[in-house]
Image 1 (cartoon, protein in one colour):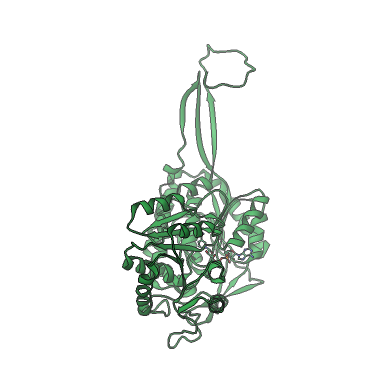
Image 2: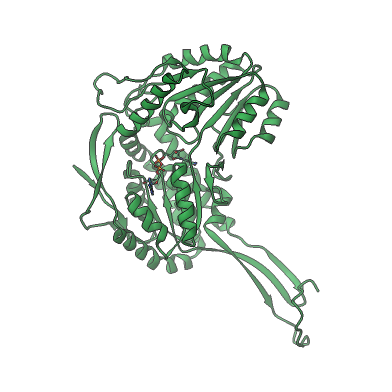
Length: 498
Ligand code: NAD
């Protein structure tokens, strides 16, 4: 069976692992490889390598760091099909979806190619006689990223290209469920000219994460994953004195007003609800219909679901793949069972489905509930599977209140043709990323990504300008090169404006 090991100091880690985890092929249910699970000593070795590499990397010309990113960008473009293949093999998503993931990661790499512009400081001449002031942004040192299973290439790319381009050295702890894309990208970074130790990968679970959180030589931690772990990372990382950004889970609502274009809304609900089998933090999980919108929307949604093909991600005919592990499939099926028990109206049941010849894969077909209430478990939980719930409300304000009362705040969308209603939504909704007739409002790399409420812990959203701020610290320098004729002691507090 294939063995996946860590990447430390520019090469695969040679020592045999003391613990390993299973990596499935979700399409067939077969365990395809074993991944090493790092001990604290392995994390220490990665931090030592990153620490040694930092001074030279920090001091390398910014144009050199940019050139490495340009070269890496070219290699990711050239190898995008190979990266997508690794994603599909371990995550299960379809090939076009995996290619889309690589593309969105690539956009952050392209943004990082422009790091010289992003870390430029400000300068003020003559703030007092002979006194000038300027700011600069400097890298933090060794920083770490801990990432979820659902975007095994893209979410790490939200972090390390900017961190590295800004002059930091990086430790990535990817999800142990789909570790291979990170290893492949480590090789591409080496080929792009990145010196050993600047980018390291440690695989593992809580043991590795806890060592990252307490290690005194790690300055900052970026995390993306579920809310309870995000909170844990934030609390423990900040307690250890680190800068932490921790993005958590979601429960995204899409509101459909009666005046909406129902074809557009149905296309959006099906695409955003079932894309990647619902394993996206920006997936639509709840469709809130206002007034009589449900009666016109639901038949359109059902007609589209009937045509969706669920199957192995590598099959060009599949539009939706399996879930990532048997445990996750069982959790999703358990929540569907609960929805039925609690009296929601199960219009389409995806339980028990498997494509011919793939009976042991982790499949759940698209599932649709109507008449869901906010008291039900299927409403309260982030299902993270191909399950859409319709909640019917009488008034637009009820929809807004429901979303604002929800503990999560990642993404939301409104479908309407009414500009005034849209303007009210974008202004009043307590959610970090808002789409108007756009179901998955993920900003491009020159903006930053992040939810509100329990979808984020810490002040900084990820990538874009906020990402640059997170991975750098500002220094302000005040210089005095006086004209020799100005002399004299002054014990008053400096007033540079004099
Ligand atoms: P997860 O929280 O289980 O795991 C994320 C990372 O934390 C992994 O690297 C994992 O090894 C580690 N981890 C897991 N349990 C841990 C523990 N007890 N202690 C320390 N570390 C632990 O998340 P997942 O299942 O891999 O990913 C799905 C979740 O990620 C969903 O909740 C989804 O909404 C969220 N997500 C959020 C965003 C966002 O931008 N807000 C993006 C993608 C995914």
